[in-house]
Image (cartoon, rainbow, N blue to C red; front, side, top):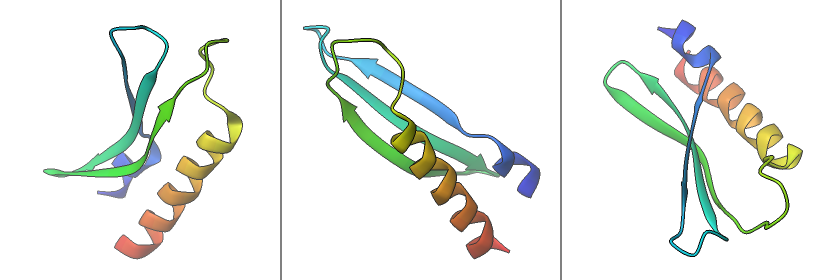
Length: 69
């Protein structure tokens, strides 16, 4: 069960104007989908997700593992 918690998926979408993106990080455990983090990405420079956002996802994934054990 927890093997699936080792990774998470990024789902991204952009607005019709092309300058705003919406990013959701989630994991699937069995039939359930847990959203770890979602945010609006407004940067017009580069497509890289800021490190602080990735660190937050990893922290929430770690806490989810602890809660589900």
